Length: 208
Image (cartoon, rainbow, N blue to C red):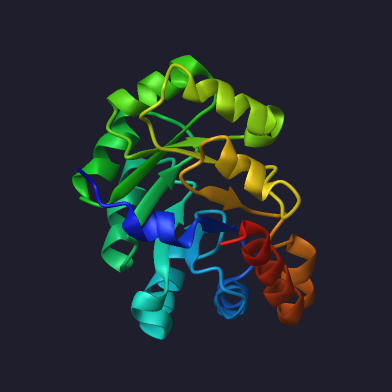
């Protein structure tokens, strides 16, 4: 069984879509300062493998580091070799999933409907990323727990400090937070203190 200890301990995965590689690195520093230590560098960020390699150098084991928005088979090996510990795809496509699995990393495949959840499970997902979770909210996640009580589900989209506790009460193993945690405006403006404050508010709202 895949070890998800680091994921469950971190609880909040920051989904980072930065305008530049430099902004991504500064954003990670700010997130870590605020207590958010699980970081997903997406392929929407320029030079994601380079960014991942530098984050691993700077933060080492203090960060649970992953790569996301993996939509092409060849991307999986690239970011795994750079140091990604978990890999995330927004969907569940067989050829992409196979290459992700071949890396031996923790695999998260995207789904929304019950059928898609079943596909993700059969393709080998360790965690099913429910995306965009904002469409159904915590009540939708709770409904999915009925037919899939043993699957590890990670809602992404629509998670904020005001409802984060509801997501976990509904059965989330972890949550993914993007613009609600790390706005594009903050990154463009270089408001890293604001990013740290946002991270602190998310962590405080966990109530752990």
